[in-house]
Length: 288
Length: 269
Image: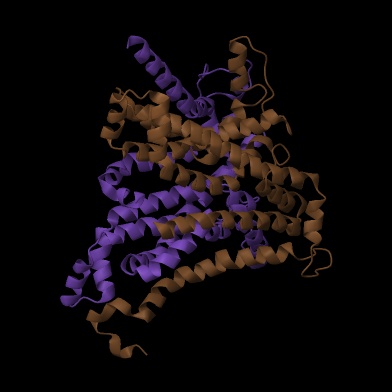
């Protein structure tokens, strides 16, 4: 239908060309994003014993599993806590490193180093740091304090250690986002507030934070959706039963029990929540 | 004023120490014999420095295999991400009508939980013969999904910076659409190509979730490192970890000047 429009000067709205350019990408996304996602839903609603579909057997199974409930609850509180800690630390670092002092550029580079390490490399070291005879307890012993069980399965301190390790690794991202926003605040605004005699806390509360609001919101949304799928940190530090989350639960069901139905049920639940939380991001994009 | 700058210095040193500690301990353990790594109290620098962990690595077959598998998957991922996103990114940069929906789909692709795709992919790959594939072809197909959104974002902003007039001038001189793209636009976005290649390379090289699910015995480096760490080989694990840092370091040293000259600035829109 397009044969007469091969003339070079009418390239703007040639539909077949657009289709041809997009086809490989769309085909890939259909095969490796949409199809497996749909297949996971089918697996989740298929009874693995009888093959009946649709069936709620898998959901009944995980419903009765105490580990699933721990995973679900952790999957709510772990992202909340780690995003909160990362925001506070990232903001503190950004405020500190927005100030002028010698060596600031070097320190800015150093602050990003933990995130520059591959996640699995970082977590491997953290295993050694928080092991019973590891560096953290070594440091405590050096100042005469008794050792601490950082990673005992099911303890509150273990949860806190996982949050701390996640924050140690990811705070640089929040820091970079907030630093960019902070340096974009006109210097005159802050100078004026200083001249008016505003102290640090009022300056932070009434001038800096309101101006940083869009960057803070963006950081919360991005990190929030990202933190929801947390997997490697609890798995590498504590195994599948220490601080279970939905991802490690699905991994456990798949690789230790070969129970693809339960694994699909848990991971589909996670996917639905993630996609729901992505919607605000898409809307911000439309509004922008 | 003096007390304030002393405080500032103390905070700066503490921040630097905390952020350099993981890297420092990793390098220390890589060059320390295992009996010292197991010692109590732990040592903070190697008392008997050694390269025996690295020579031990060189003699294990699994590591060599893992290294080649990781490299192959990573390079294939960069290639497939480019093949799939170059035409789409060029089109999206030229036509907002295409851009909006595509951008939305790719945001979802980027934020979708890996485990929620890794489980069904593993089940499907079992049928297709790609599960635990010796060359990591299944892992490559999964990693491409990580590469696409990043490559698309960077390349699109690269193409946006190329004025349409340049391509139009080439058309007037008789070039075909493809000719204008190949000879004019593509060379102009070289910094974006480099930036995208680096980021996709590192994404695939570092990725753990798909790798641990899809390559259960034919492991790439990240799951191999996980098993070494869990089964108590601090020296070997740290040596593998140090090895995993090498590509990032090479990229930083070789391509840092290119990145600084604007390859990444376009992507931070």
